Structures are given as structure tokens and as C-alpha cells.
Length: 264
Image (cartoon, rainbow, N blue to C red; front, side, top):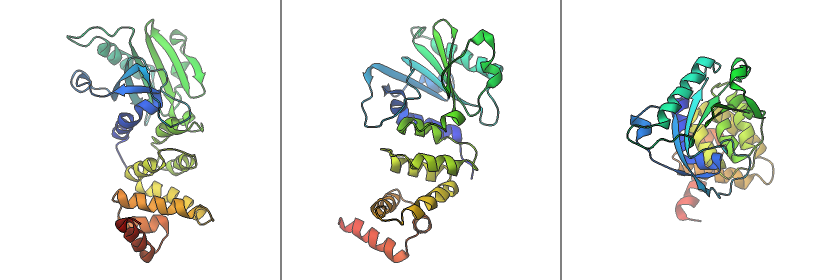
């Protein structure tokens, strides 16, 4: 099953940029649509730390006041040409027409699936490895650039924030393994992850759900499985899919649905 990974990325950023950065994100900035097309443009209120319940590493903790985020390398490795292209677009966003300059207040983050070995080896850019999955450089004195390698981040058990980026696995054959790792963690937004997975790739999600369904036969997992079914019903998932994913009978499904409608 194919899906628009860029659109999924943008949707995730809209609802989870604060979790991934650790800052309150100010929404809305029409110029990000009309002035120049970038994958995501975020304004972070650096004076308002995000205080949600989610724990773990913050992959986007290096946010500046203004931030350009680009998703690159879905079917290719990030090249020097594409790197310079993204830097150039960020410099345009740095000085929007008719508005004060953002020089020194803007940063660029590039998410790439594969590690750009050749780019990182270019001495001119002086990339520094700050995490096994994160590299940073200052192309210009006041323009920090961060590269996050999604395939390297997949190996990290970093909690809620990193899991949202791990979700963006473009290879359908790898998706079940990556998603199983995500759902194996104790995440606050577990049900939100399941819903997003279903929307992204129903087949991959059903593979993962079957794995957890088998595990759920053990004592102590029954309530969790029932809650998963209830959430699927609330989210409008088709009955046939719920029966297939959960392994319950039609009679059991009708009983759960009746209990929900009665409020018991």
C-alpha cells in the first residue's frame, strides 16, 4: 500500500512538533505556504518549554526561534547538491519580503532516511556527530544545520518523541518490524500511533496487530485488547477489519459495542 510520506510527515509535525522539540510551537504562518514551499516551517516559543507527560529524548531539541524542516532522501541519499538546495531555501526564509530579517534566529533540520556518508565527509562543512543518528554544522556563522538519519534513529528506544519520527519508515517491508518496536514501548499516545499506522499502511498495521493479539491472549492483556477494540470503534474502523485484527468473534464485537453505547 502506498501513501504520501511527505503529507504524513507534515501531519505528524503539526500535532507533535512540541513533543519532539520540547518547546511550545506557535502555529500558523501563511508565508510558509505562499512565500516559498518547504516541508515544514515551525515557530518555537523558546520561553515556553513543553511540559507534556511524554518522556524520552527530543530529536528536535536544537530548534531556534524559526525553523525550516525538510524531509529528504526517500529513494536516494542526501547529496551535496540537495544539501545546498535546502540551505539556499532556508536563507530565503531568513529574509522574508516586507518583514524583519531573521538572521541568527533561524535553523534548518533535514530528515534523511539513509546516512549521507559522502556529504558528512566533506571537510568544508565540518559536520559534528552529536548522536549516532544526528549530525550538525554551521554552514554560515549564524545558520545551524542539523541532519537526522531516520534509519539510525530506528535503533533508539527513545520514547514518545523519537517514536513519531521512527513511524516514518518508507519501506513497506521494514514497516512491521519498526512499528512493532514502537508499540512495544510504554507510550502515552499509543492509541494515536495505532490510528496513524492504520491510516498509513493498513496491511503493515494488521501484521503488527496480529503479533500483539497473540501476545494478548496471555492473562493480564485482555483489558488492553478490549480498549484497543473500543478505540478502533471510536475511530470508525470497519467492523471486518476490527474482527480480523483483534481475533474476536462477531458476538464478542457486538457485546463490546453494546456496552459502549450503554455507557457501562
